[in-house]
Image (tube, rainbow, N blue to C red; front, side, top):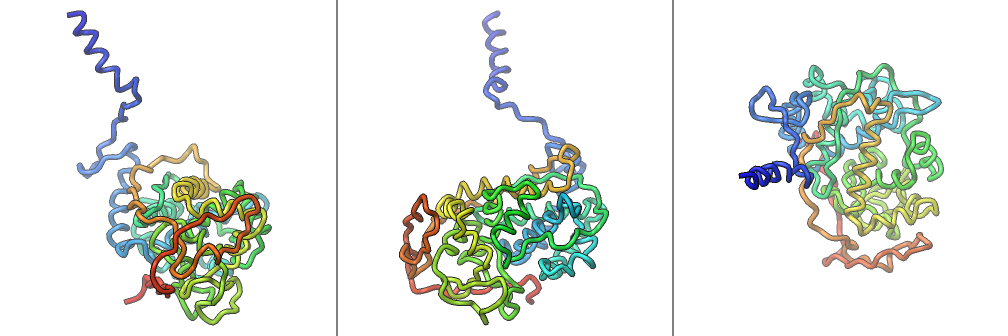
Length: 361
């Protein structure tokens, strides 16, 4: 009998010893969902609405816009100039912030997301909504990390000061200094630019809206770090636009800032390190974008609702050069390691189509 009691105690204690104890989840008032924190229950209805009615085209223009808004709102803070960071001021004080040149095109993003932000304004502050929508946007992009989300940001008090959002024609030194002023290292800056893997330009060349930055704009993969390192030979549209340099594949656009970061001695080896390392890209981007979402906020006062963010579809591809291009087209920049040898995709040279716009009928 004593042996049986001892064995029973061991069985009960074993999960704790092995670290397998699962914290109890709160059952939500709807009787269907549960969350690690009961305060997060109100977000399930918001999540379902966004996934079903905003991001219903998958990793497309609406998802790209939501992710872009995360950055343009959060970076609006500076130790000297002020600003609230990730507080939603870009939506609340849009009459001011949309006049900033760096926010050109954000009016279209707010036109798409704005009705949802207003619909759920009784549930979430603007700052929380923007960060929640951005986290959810990644959940529909294959290969993206499952990023953390916390809620409880207070309502914004004022517009961001001007000139805090980096521009595609800025120098590497200016970009690194801007991010450095709010605590981001060069490695974190390059990691954040992984977002360009699922992005495109609408206003750099207004004649060709939706021009992607790499050949796979609906997949969160390392292709952006490969394509930007290749020798540019053409412009997708008129050419000669501020902030644009030649790209290697017809139908894609290369931002001048990406081009320079891939070649500057301060960042070129960091850039190259992501080219064939999907896991590194996921891990470092996930950490950097969550850090971005905390700018200007008291992290200790926020509630972790990360368990509401679905896992994105897995990445099933592998790093490669676009069709007809190879290692000989690489503009080697890192002085301490060679660019990785990658296979070339089969087929004729690509012509990458534009990203369909969210307001297209």
